[in-house]
Image (cartoon, rainbow, N blue to C red):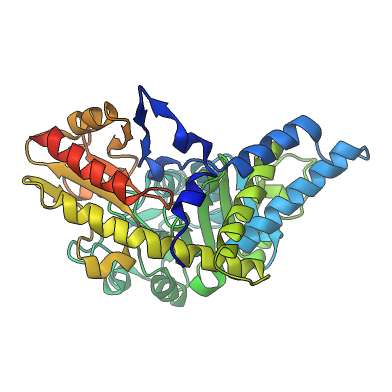
Length: 414
C-alpha cells in the first residue's frame, strides 16, 4: 500500500497553517511533533464534559478514574508491557528521571558504579550525576563509536565490574539519530548484575517498542514526541517497582504506579494519551484488517518507517552534496534502518544559528544548538554555543518539503 501521507496530513490542523502565504514545514519534530485533531478533541472533550478530580462517587469523578486507568493500560499496550501498573506517567521524561532516580538508587552504596553512555540527552544524564553526587557513587562514561555512531558491546563489556549497579542507555540519539542495539547491550549489563534504564524518547516516534523483548528494566519516552500531549511515560518491571522505596505523601496509596505519581494527574492529557495510541491503531487499520490492537500499532510503525527511510536518505543525500557541510551521524543509505530521521549538520563557514534563522524566514522550522545533547556535543568537540543545525522528519513530512529544505540550506550557506 502506498503510504497515505495526504490523508494523514489532513488529520493535523497545524499543517495547513501558512505564514505570510508560505506553507509551514515542521521539521523541528525531535523537540515535539504536531498533534492530530483526534488528540485535540479528546483533551478538549474531557475538559468540557468530564473535568473532575479522581476518587469520588459522582459521575465525572468516576469517569475521570476511568480515563486515568485507560491511559495507563493504553500506554502499556503501546510499549508492549503486561499491565498498566508498570506505567508511571508524569510531566516529562526528565522530571520522571530525577524523581525515580532517588528510588532506583536508594540502596546503592558509596563507590557503587553507574555507567552513562555519551549518546545521552541530558534528561538521562542529569538525574544520575545528581544522585551519584548525593550518594557518593562513581560515574563511568561509555563512549560511542565514531565509525558506527553506536555504542558497541565490547566497549560496554570493558567498563562493567562487580560494582556496576546501573546502565543509563540511549535508544536513539536526539543529535546523531543513531539507534543502539538495546537488546544486546541490556543482556550484557544484566548478566553483570546491573539494572538498565533506557531513554527511548527519540525512538518511540519512529520505531516499534517492545519492552519485554528488549530485556531492560526501565524505559522512558514522551508522548509529545509521538504526536500526543505533553507527558512523560516511564515503564518499569512490576517486580522492581514493587520493591523500590517510594518518595510520596503519607496519605498516598502504596499501590503501583500510584505511589510514584506525584500530585494530581493532568487528566485531560491522559485522555489525549489514549487518543494518541488510538491514532497509531487507526494508522495501522489503513493497511490491515486485523483487530489486534498491538498488531495494528506494529503495522503503523512498519508503514511509517517504509515511508520515512527514503525521505531520510533523500535529505542526507542532498545535504552532503552541499560543499562544506558535515553530517554528524550515519550517512550510508544502506544503514538507514540503524537511525531515526533526525539529521544534524554543520557548515565549515556559516554558523548553525545563521542557517536556522535563514530557514525560519522560509517558514522551515528547525532547531540549532546542542539541543540538550550536551554530552554528545562535548564528545564531538562541537562549540556548545552553536552546536548543530538539526532537522527531524516525521511521517507527515513530504518529499517536496525535503527538496525545499535542501534548496534553502544551500542558499543559506552560499
